[in-house]
Every structure is written in structure tokens, then in C-alpha cells.
Length: 481
Image (cartoon, rainbow, N blue to C red; front, side):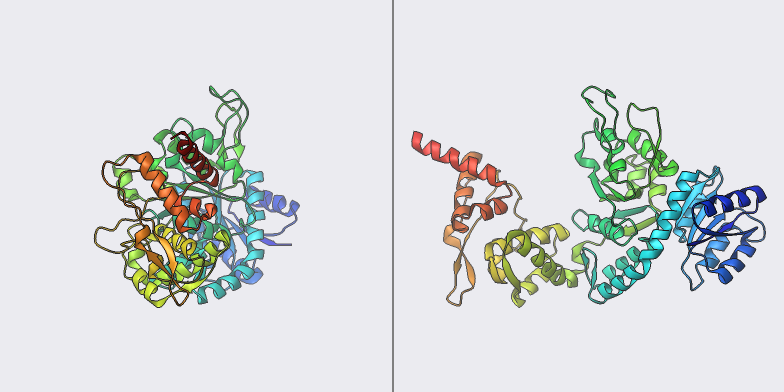
């Protein structure tokens, strides 16, 4: 039976909460103010403290601060009166587990206590795992031993156990979604859904339905009831990527859900309680976005309880090799390859490049190299042609376009390693049609992969079915000619 301490100066509220919490199977004690609450926290060592914000002698904020100095870990839940939401957000910045407005909603309080208890059970295990991973420069899906990444790992570990909202900022491709996944994996919510939605990729007319859900007949084309992302992420984590691209009207509704923990589907008259941890991400400067009118100021301050700023890869190049090694393990499994690692010469080249596309560009480069090599060690010969030279731009993910594209066949050295055969390059001259450029690129890629259609489709960034259709189209054209 978990121990819960209720700190409330109002007599009837204190006794009512104590009886309610005991009826759920907890051992409950109560205190009349923060001073008495601190004394009982020290002597009784509860797992959870539910405290009012405004009390005589010692208020809830001071109690929270003093509890944070104790050797025992306690989850602190703040009770807030109407109009004190900003104070509650400040409390969460100081380490509170969650907050609940008065009058207390029993269903929501029961959920919060359940989650806090579950978090306590997982803390010891996660702390041991986290310590072991930190020693090897790994935190969940993230890799890095540079000072910047160590600081970020430390921040993630501190705030992951709470329900606090987090805003992740940084350039495109720096790994903002990985931060959200790490926060999820290191929390008590890790066995529940992780849902990611890119606000910039959803048409403005559909984004409210996508996030909040809709009832049948809510609008033209709503043929059936549909759950939104909040409901799909129930008891889990929801990542709202590119939050600055969300329409202002939808931002207002999102703020309401974050503050009330209730949502209303489009076309519904009923509000449904939700228990979701929200992580938002943006590649924009959020303060500039607020100034420009792209992001509501009140939503920004509500989301920005903690801000994790992801550095561009060029600012921690010492992590490139370790990140690349981790990516090779992933690509070997995905593409059924047996690449053993990186040659020293390739490491030097990768660490000397500025990576304008950040970790995403590194991932694309490593994936291409692994597919081309298939096995052995990756070397400079597996990099894209002209990699790192002045004017070099990362190759496009999709075929098409009038720019010059190079695809080279890998031929063996005498020592069994592979090199690029420049004679098998595709050079597209200005004036060539897009269809013809695409045809040459596809056929040469098949030559480079020894007619392995699966690998060719991976390199070209198209599905195997699309590749088969293109080849059939070329074959029919040849017969016709």
C-alpha cells in the first residue's frame, strides 16, 4: 500500500481527501499546513504528497522546494484554485509531478495517483538502466558523449518521470523526435502508446479532426466516428511536431485541452477526460514565432515548462562516429547487411564535414553506404560522389529533377574491398527530359546493385512496386519501338 500525505489547511477538504484516497487502497495521512506537512514527510516518508498551493506558515511552493532537498524521492501533486494555473506550471518547473485544479475531480486525482505509484515502481529500474547507458554515451535511442549531449541526457532523465510539458527546439534533422521518444521510454508511460503527429503535414481543414477526433456527420465526409491523436495516445505520450505550423484556432483548442485535461471531439457535446503527456517540437525560434503571430503566447508559455534545445550536429562533431556506428547496427538489420564498422579514413571525413542536414543527413549517408557495401568496413569509396567538396549538396531522396545526378557501381579492389567505378556514372545534361533522366538513373542503379531490385528501390527512395511498374513500362516501350 503506497503512502499518500495530504497537506491542506481547509478542514473539510482535508478530511474529505483523506477518506477518498484511503477508499482507493492507499495509506493516507494528513497535515494542516506546509510546516506540519514537511515534518510528516521527513518522519513518515510517503511516496506521494498532495498539497494545497496557498497555506499559512509554509505554502505549497516552499514545501515542494523543501521536499526536493530530502533524500527520499516523493511525487508532489499540487492542488490549485481557479486562476492559479501559472503557479502550477511554475511548480512543475520546480519538480512537481502534476497538478489538479479545485474543486478536485476524483477521477483525475485517482489517475494521477495511479500514475505516480507506477512511476515510483519503475524509478529504481530506470535509474540503474540510465546509469549504465550514460556510462556508454547512450540514452534510449540517442547517442553522444559530448558535453552538449551529456547535458541533454541529464535534463531528459530529470524531467522524464513527471507529466510536465516539454518544448524541444532545434534545426531540422537534429533529432527532436528522438528526445520525445526518450522522454516516453524513461517514464512510467513507456508501456503505453507513443503517438507523433507532424502539424505541418496535415491540411488546415483536417488538423482539428486529426488531433481531437470527430463524430459521425461532424462535417462533410465524416462518415464515421474517429478517435483523434489525443485519444490514441491515452496514458501515453503525444508529440506535436512543428507546433508553429498549427492554425491559431487549433492552438486555442489545444491550450484548453492542456489546461483542463479534457477534450471535445468535433461535432460532440460531451467533454472526455484525457491523460496524455504532451511534447511539442519546432525548428523555429519560438519567441520569434510568438512575435510574428505564428504561435500563441499563452500556448508557448504552457508548453515551455522545460525547453530542450537540440544542438546542430556541426556543434558536436565528436559524436558523429558513435552515432554512425549505432546507425550501422540499425541499417544492418533493416537491409540484411553485415557491415562491421567504419574505416579510420571515413571517420576522419565524416567528422570534418559540417552536416547542414544534421543527424538526418548523416543517417541518409550511412544508409546509402551500408546498402552499397553490403558487408565489410565502410570507407570513403561508399560516400556520395564529391562528398564534402565545395558546392556539394546531399543527394535527393527521390528521383526526378533536372540537376546532375551521379550513381556509381561498386567494384571490388584486389583486397576484397569496394571502390566506386566512375565509368558507371549517370550524367544528366541540361535539356534531358525528366522521364529520360529517371529511366537512366533507375537502370544504372540496378547495374550498381547487380540487379537487386530491393536494394535499388531503397537507394532510389521508391517502393519495390513502383520500381517494378517502371521496369514494365520501359520494357513495353522497347517492344513498341
